[in-house]
Length: 178
Length: 442
Image (cartoon, rainbow over all chains, first blue to last red; front, side, top):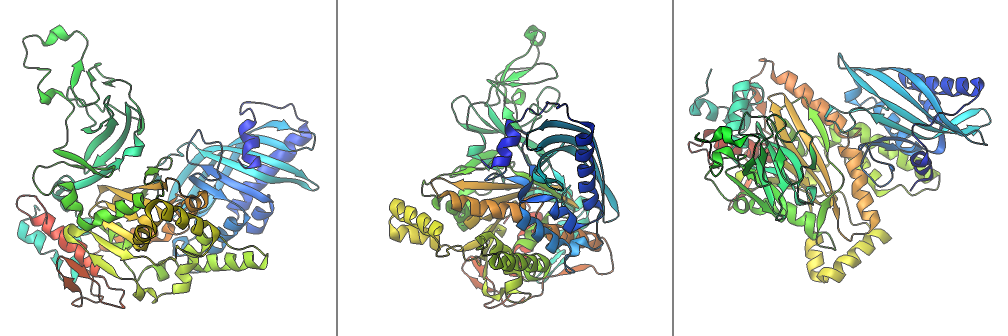
């Protein structure tokens, strides 16, 4: 099992840690900035928010506790994320013509735990509207982030994204992370 | 209008098909009746239902079906509706229904083979025409259901060929899904991905064997994969094999796809030769081949591994990629809407890395975040819009038309071509099904 998935699987998903207001604010600011990077297509900023061995994960089943070695909607390391960026921004990526637009709102930010290193497990809820080919699609779900404390703030070791309709069917496909 | 046989036949010519075949709602209804509710349609694999009571839903044409394992551990295929007032009996896509099916409306219960078992205050039916032994009051059964080595199909109309005859040489796709396992068994991995295409079901099938599209449609993916491969190498990392599945699109280019032959089989089935080089000389592949030799002996193992099919299309509902254990089945929802179920299979006793290689393909190509099919679905969507227009009435299948090589009951694409033979072949099968008086198809 990957270490970060193990960490999330072992954590109580309903826990609520009594963290300082500064920590709460720093974590919220990080989550807001992350979705802003997506909405504004700031790809270098997005990649820098993940640790070198960090993963973006969207499981395909509710009871999944591991991404590695199983079918997922997303399971991407830094290389796959860079490939997605390279593909989606290539001039011949015709399904990105016209480009889509994303607009996220993140809320209900509850820190589950903060350990002695300052590493955080936090859950939140999101809504994302996608404008694609002259229509709006809506995605809603839950984030769980395992954040590692770094000198300058945090980096994502694992981001788990559970769409409310994770089992599909998916209308068309999802080209960017949500 | 209602379509006469003559008018339907007129929609398909040797090298072109009429746009109405893709857009007309009445033609769609006729397709459901004469093709999907008439010939053999894929239901699912036996490994989806392991214990008695396990069920899985499927759709055949417009009909809701359920595949269930009964108390004798036999698989039954039934219509998922209560004969009383029509309510769906199973609502979740999959689950275990226990010892019987239970209707949530009036508590009628049915055995797992569909027989009516009981209902509350039974005496209300005394002296009426309701008869517990009359199949009219059981869950309806398709005219026929059968399996080929654990792959289950249903046929909703009487007559026509049996499943084995219908599949013909296309059955080799299923043989490959099983025989490539050193443990001689295959099973589904998890559940399937389901993706809705905003386009006609025939556009999906046509695309699978359309050799002139991959280099064009997937150019951006090919280039991005090459970029990441180079990046990994410069970081001293050997790129995983699955990246070459994608960089091939750029490596082979727009017009390099002439090397891969296609074959048309009876009943509309067709195949595309493999191109992905799935036997690299690496420790995982060598370990896999060693296990195959141990089980089958060298000669038989090489015979199995030597079958080089990239896609096998089983008309009208399956696209199978045997070397990577992927199976897609289509459930048409309307002339411009098609649901795909995308399954991945695991070869019993194959090394873990061989499983992960095909899982990576499942992810990169077939998942809802696909880096490949995103552009395919978009093209088909655009085609569907374009075909609504009357600016031109015909869809062109002229590439290498008139050069197909017919040998017995098989049709081969012209050598060194990116021939549209499979597209012509499928439309001719379509015409046969749509115009057959007895509904038996070709």
